[in-house]
Amino acid sequence: MNEADKEFLHDMVKQLDEAIQRLVIEEGQLIAKIGTERTNELMEYWRRELTSEEEVEFKKTMDYWDIQFIRILTRSKRVHNTRAEVGQIFMKMNSRIILTRKKS
Image 1 (tube, helix red, strand yellow):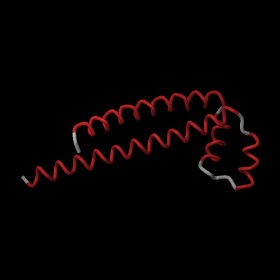
Image 2 (tube, rainbow, N blue to C red):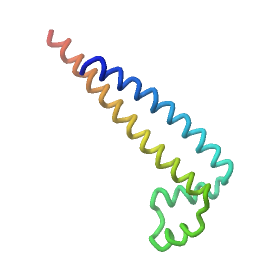
Image 3 (cartoon, one colour):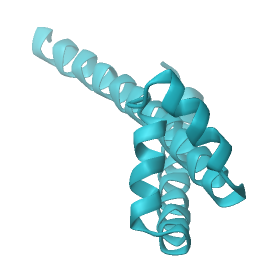
């Protein structure tokens, strides 16, 4: 991997870490706004723990802030997964460097 690619990945990590921090703050603000009980209900919905009938009924009760909370959970999961993938790329790069040094 060339230096430009490594620099790109380092920048990506920084941006992803910043995004994670922002999402944690936004999530906390929404939890304060909608309350713990509603948050728990939304988490059950998001984790797909409701039956299809319960899901249909639950969706009818969702408001703007509920939808925003679900969006934050989804973005957070995506950002965490991307961050983990970049971390794995770095681990593979480092293991190749270590293996190359051992052969020398």
